[in-house]
Image 1 (spheres, rainbow, N blue to C red):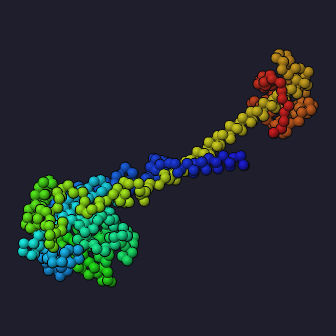
Image 2 (image 1 turned 45 degrees about the vertical axis):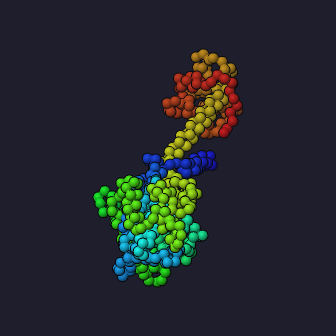
Image 3 (image 1 turned 90 degrees about the vertical axis):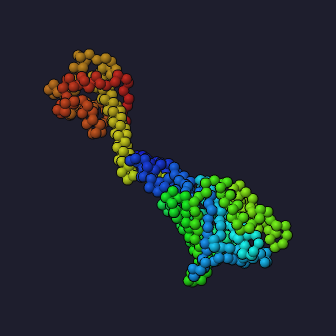
Length: 472
């Protein structure tokens, strides 16, 4: 029936529309949250790199590094003229086996700052050595596993730029700047369209790390490994491939020995000062000649330098990929999905509730109908006997009324005698109404009404003025 189906449809539609407002993981109601088994979806798990991997806590600090560079055939590269750098003509060649790197690594929640000072001696007798500075900046990812992506670089010869900055496509980029890109942001673009490197740093087991970088026809793979149980010392290997052709070609590889982590900034600076003196690098630049350049002199206090280039990353640069910035994670917990058992329970409960409501409505209507039938019947009896209906009747008057209906004087009123009374009064009852009336009088269901049942029936009729019965 329309009246019955509409509330059910309404209730079910309300239940369905309310699901979007539910949270996942409500026991017995909604399905488990994805974040229960996948931390990327768990809002209570932070993007903090140190929480994602113990490696970053171990790696943070100050280092003195010896780097040994080898050609593809394994021959030691003891010196280089660094022809691809914008150095003055006649500046000489520089030692590379080893060259010294002083590294300062800071891990601040979702951001990594790496400052390198690369020191190389000059092979020309009495000539000053070289100091190259470079910075790399990285951010955490939405993976929450300690993986970090490269944000950008800055160096002695190039100001800071993000890896996907189209204004810096590798032109005029020095060899060190290109070779030492790590933790690069993984981007879905091919080599021909890429202006920056594609790479990321992936820690493993808290004691090792793997880096893969690809861009501008080069593939660089690096691996870092703790060489002490407390990770106070590291060893690293880097391989550089030319991938511009169909078959990749190994160009060079290097080995870096980090030694022990330096305890404090003063000790770190003292170690650098020792190397500066050994490589004949003056405290201040010379004033004339081919070596009158700032990179042929000791840097300012390296423990306080914010960045190597003239331009440091701005907050707007960080916010382009820092997951703690106003960026939408691709791993958002969806709205709660109802359990199948709960949906079945809701449907059954809805049917039970609606059935109860309809039963109450039915009972209420039947009670009202019964009341009207009784009042109309009482009116017909009163009229038949010439008695006022609303009058308080005595037992004698009730007996008189009973006998006037009991035409066969049997002491019992059967259905036919009731029907004759009603028909003689001119009131029309349907068969169903008559059956309902007689059922209320014949309490014991014997098919006949005795005087006691008649009195009980009459006493149950309200004394208010009878209303004209209308068949529903």
